[in-house]
Image: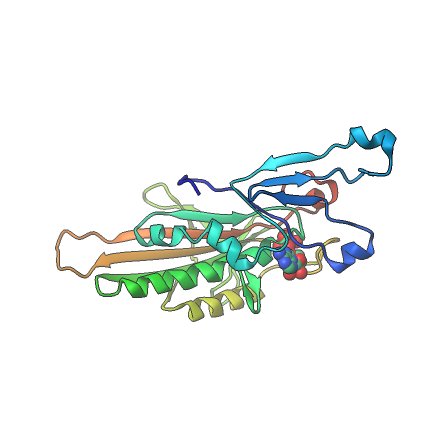
Length: 260
Ligand SMILES: Nc1ncnc2c1ncn2[C@@H]1O[C@H](COP(=O)(O)OP(=O)(O)OP(=O)(O)O)[C@@H](O)[C@H]1O
């Protein structure tokens, strides 16, 4: 894929048994890796009078995934390239949005045996740092928070308190009191993510019985310093944000595509 600063990807999730029972059928078709056709749900090939009035719509993305795409396919073609950049001191953000039940949490977090983008990214990050151990020294910290009803909550702290947004001395917005934990391998990260997720605010919606009602933000900070003795050697810091936004029920019901 051509080098660019923003990649927009679309993933079509498989239709679920409940939708099949209610008479739904897939209308999104991924054509040619980055073109998605939304077929007119009212299209009826037997109805000759209306055949010419079908309102299919085509949309282009940087990359599009069909319902057959695996978690690793999605990771490799969206986020894998960011790992070496974050290690070199660049900042990057990966976020998922879409209506409730679209598959954001599945894509970002995954489930047992099907790890999502967060776990796959961190696992590669640690593997890459291991390869560079001889020449570089690293320190990795992570923080995990949720935003629910306009309130910021710490998902890794000893207790789930409400945190304040403040400005630091350089005018940057910071979350005051956010727990930053130093991590040493991807197992440790997975353990913290799992514990943090148990604290997330969940509530069933009409279309998703395991709906996460909050935005979850994972912040991973990588500090890198050369082992070659050089007094002028600066520490390079790269920050990776991975965000699972809460999906709007209104968007799911109306197909407006907006989100809360
Ligand atoms: N690509 C997929 N393959 C298999 N199952 C999927 C896929 N995408 C989503 N699902 C399943 O669909 C259901 C809804 O997905 P998920 O909870 O990720 O939606 P969401 O977009 O995060 O919704 P919300 O905004 O309500 O939290 C879950 O049971 C999830 O496991």
